[in-house]
Amino acid sequence: MSSHSPAHLPLHLLFPLLSGFVYVAGALLLKRAADLGADMWRTARLCNVTTALMFGPLALLGGTVPSWQLCWQPALIALCFIAGQVFTLLALNIGDVSVATPVMGLKILFVALLTTALIGERIGSGLWTAALLSSIAIALLNFTRTPAHHRVGVTILLAAFAATSYALVDVLVQKWSPAWGAGRLLPIMMAFAAAASPALRPFGRWRNVGTGRVLAPVGRWVVGGAVCLALQAIMIVSSIALYGQATVANVLYSSRGLWSVLAVWLVGHWFANREREHSRRILAWRLLGATLLMAAILMVALDSHNTRR
Image (cartoon, rainbow, N blue to C red):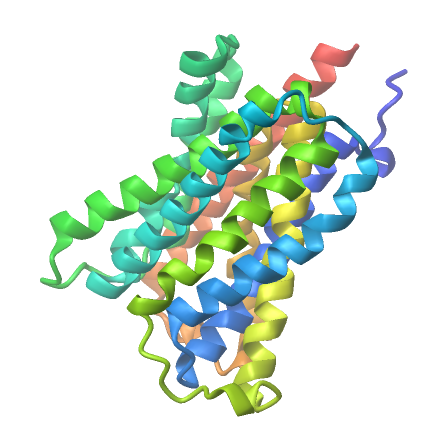
């Protein structure tokens, strides 16, 4: 009998699944904040600082700084993290969400490719298939309408850069965390990201959200979203740092596409979200995407189960 029953899901599988759920909560909160007038660039800076503070207690996991001359490693990961954030915001500002978001789902495949290229880890055919299914599923789950004329080519390029940047974060964490330890690499990485965040200030318009309105309704949505995004980042990155298997983690993390569909239908109205007013055609695409996603998740779970037997 297997030692891992559904009631005792291994942490390297549970963390990515939970992080996908928490991500959706954070996205709904920040989407509502944006609708109320929160500036995305200022939100990005707040998210970075919040994440750095919440990553601090991970120092208790232990580890060591192998050499201060190697501090370029967490600094490089932080740079990739910020680059992914900037490319994401640019893609969403220039084009449609229905174009940018599905392309960002290609992160799963980029992780698999970069894991092979930078770490030399062999990716089995089952995981490759699961990664491909998940990417297709994300595209279907995020389909909203036929893209308008908004600079489609540039939007796709920027979103692909964002996916590549975030994929590099995951793979480099997996590559360098054994030498550093999760309790050193991750807090230092996010400290670098927070320290570099003021560089985003010139891009912000600082509209509608003044420094004296932190506790105003829009401020509460932003803070809540920032905390959720920090928490999901802790779970997904810690899972990779502690257990490796960045490709597995990202396939499971892609369950956020399914959680987003369910959240929009069940609680979306709490956030003044109107996505559930989409047509039946769109719902059919999303149902197909959810089916493919669940198939990918099942493939990863079975592959992990067979590996540990």
